[in-house]
Image 1 (cartoon, rainbow, N blue to C red):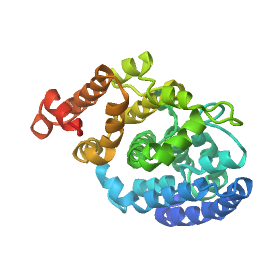
Image 2 (tube, one colour):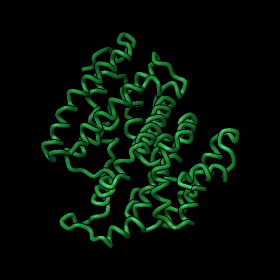
Image 3 (tube, rainbow, N blue to C red):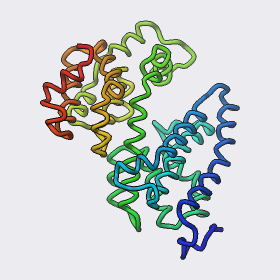
Length: 321
């Protein structure tokens, strides 16, 4: 039963309903984290994802200003709820032993399934449509996102798209900042075991690891990166450099001009660690293809007075020069 008359939702302000809805969801997060740790003692993913969502929700009001919304805007309140709940599917997939990166429904769908009782209880049908769309499609590739956007039915399409764009952008920026997970010696070892070791019973040989680390870029990676397109997850398997290029390619999907500007101005944080890795692991020709592709993206998106020519951007990106 709904908390309020769904024909007259104004009797309960959306900010209050979001507060109650978050409390409702949080009742289920604790048991999920406990189930993850019971299944795999020491697995930190549940707590890390919960912290990630909490932080994003706490920053929702300041994030909303990037698209011109203020803190009292009802859309900002929906953004706060979505930020707090969008990755719940990452917890349920751990509990049920799913690998949504490669098979089955992606974790956005699992998040929406988890949220269904809460949406029915606290939100109008229009609000629920917005929440479901943003939660589901923040985790889908751009082709699936664009197709779903074209087919969106009902009220709230503009709000759903704005929130989903922002959620995808903020998730991408956090991923780019996470260098320990992907570039520390321990992080690289864990990633290689996860993505490249098909036979978990045996360790990879030194020669196998060397081929992974210095395998160069696939033709698909070079073509798509040059065209400012993201890479399919399957491209990770080609080499670790492909994996780093796949991560760098997420900047090409960034929609917010303010965030693109921040990525460029804070490139030492967002870009340089992976660029330095590629410089030491790729042939010069491939490395400069990566630099030039990133530089043309920024030259296209940002004012010349702020970034200069493509050649000047390349020099700035080549931080170990």
